[in-house]
Length: 225
Ligand code: DC
Image (cartoon, rainbow, N blue to C red):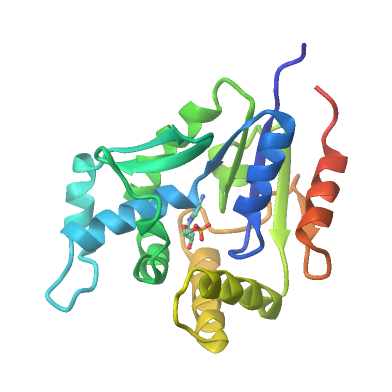
């Protein structure tokens, strides 16, 4: 049997990267790693341990605190869930306070370097689909397949709003859209590993296609292994 592939899926937030990657992983028998969860894990730690009096994140303190952080994915009912220093934080990393601060944390070079090894170690044996912002460009430049996902801001805001509503969060679509725009801007304009399409990545725009169609489109590019 040929080696299982390494697949990189990057793109804007709320394009369905993670949920789509999860299904593709199941379909192809690969491990799925949501790298955004790692940045969220660091942000969650910072909100607990490294904050200023005004409750904003003290980046300097966070950077000196990095060695105190141990992030690990563990298999819980067939799904990789994130543990911070032994505690399952899978739910907490989706809290709005984490979403509002994560781009700020993710633009720090020290944070990105800190997480690089964790990500590369997982991909080493192959058989993995990793989603994020810089997987095809920086983390796994030699990935067998690279995809870059996008969709219009209005469509993404609508999806995210429905997701939050379903989770019982009280918000409105305009706030959600503004949060997306701010995150897109910080992610794309940061100096270290900005969000951008790798030259050899396949562009997937799913503004007008649903989840199943997006999955079928991506699968159509992947050769049998
Ligand atoms: O995919 P997500 O929304 O869970 O990602 C959270 C944040 O983490 C996002 O604002 C950008 C950052 N991120 C990153 O910089 N690099 C990655 N590989 C994954 C996420």
